Image 1 (cartoon, rainbow, N blue to C red):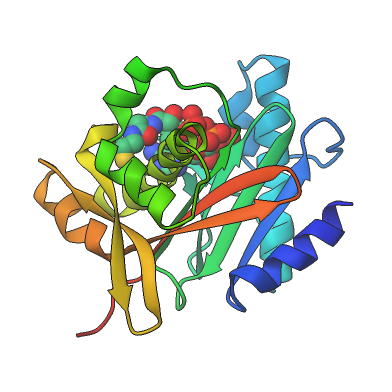
Image 2: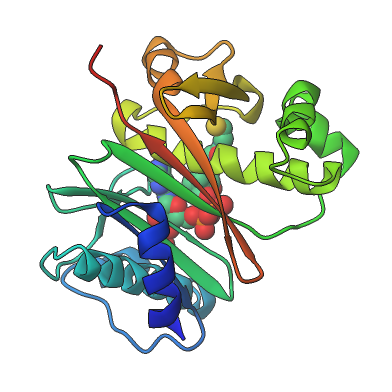
Length: 230
Ligand SMILES: CC(C)(COP(=O)(O)OP(=O)(O)OC[C@H]1O[C@@H](n2cnc3c(N)ncnc32)[C@H](O)[C@@H]1OP(=O)(O)O)[C@@H](O)C(=O)NCCC(=O)NCCS
């Protein structure tokens, strides 16, 4: 089942990137190199999710022809990839996702699983702007306010993971990032803008593209960073 899903998604993203979804509970793959160091004190469910995420990453790397290797962990919790690629990982207790891309295609990427958990009105006010929820509905990316809130939450997690390896900015609040519609040579797309963000994050956000992905019952959000030469 995993390889069928991997194959369909690989082509959807781009020829230089691969998005892999795999089950957590059925993952029999092991860890590589120093990877076990990062979960030596972890509870079993965390070990399973970490392991499935690394497994998904290696499946994606294999699809791109990248040699089998460990995916280590940086001081901020971010995955550390071999030089030629960038990538991101997300997991729930059931599924792990890895999004991996060649550096020539993207300089950084982020991914998050939108698990459709309920978001109260109060939390929605803390993490979203009403304008961006309206925009997600108007663009047809989401069909109702509830799913728009979930999407916005996941999109910002994906953006956070995408920006972190470039800016090392840990203190980025949800309301400091706003989902916006942008227009490029290939038409309009979903991007991000900042509100009271540090300078390096402010220069980073305009180059972000947010991509909603549907995979069976799963909703996944990818964020890509590709600085254009102007
Ligand atoms: C780090 C964070 C993004 C992880 O997201 P999550 O929904 O809790 O968990 P997910 O399963 O989706 O992602 C976990 C994976 O994120 C990755 N990750 C963790 N910290 C990261 C960082 N600083 N940068 C990039 N990726 C990171 C790791 O690969 C991790 O999995 P692993 O530990 O097994 O390798 C989240 O916990 C967090 O701290 N967010 C900060 C606040 C925020 O998102 N603000 C948004 C404003 S734009």
